[in-house]
Length: 274
Image 1 (cartoon, helix red, strand yellow):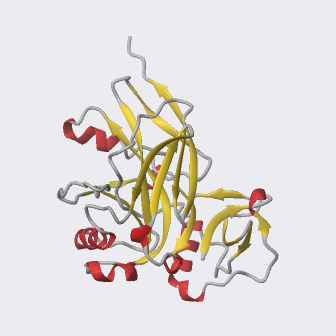
Image 2 (image 1 turned 135 degrees about the vertical axis):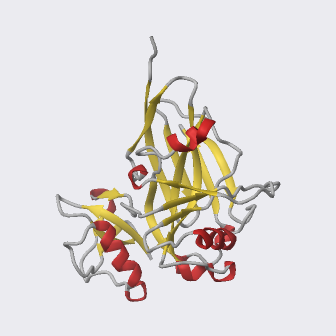
């Protein structure tokens, strides 16, 4: 099933199932819940997910929101991709819930001097089904609800005290969406192709199967350190090839086969020093 979080005609945000070019609202126990709580309920009741018996609303007439609006954790791994992906140690970092924006929203780059650059990194995102702790790599599917597209905007500049990683946690630097595609819809995620475009020019292009560390290895590694809960996100690394710095007015798009295409704008204010 392909799920979206959407608003329509001033109604409260709710989840729906995409059917062709329409979206049909899903039954959620309590519409008083926040969207993130709704998602957690949907994950818990995944086996019983059913659209309401209603006529679908045209996708063109709804506003799509980030399908995971307020994750408790966004874990980003250092897995790399490519035919010659280096066998380096797997590490991970965290991004804030405030970094999340949805389709057709704007990445607002931090106000910094011109010595800094920000680079968009296309990633496959896993929406977790928790609690997940100490998951063996062979059992990773039991801890995953679905997939989405992620853009991890990474800072490049002063690395002292990890300032580059610190700036990469800024608000709006973690776009995701537009859909959650449930895990049963993708027979073999290793065959997924991840591509990105910057101002309509091709940028990154890699396959999940060409990873330095498999999805199972990444899930195992992260869950040995921390418990992942329903609605958390694990972003599965990226390719070093094709990355280019962002500039004010840019447009970034990321597409993953069978998962969706995510597009966002970029805005930047440069700090001026006297």
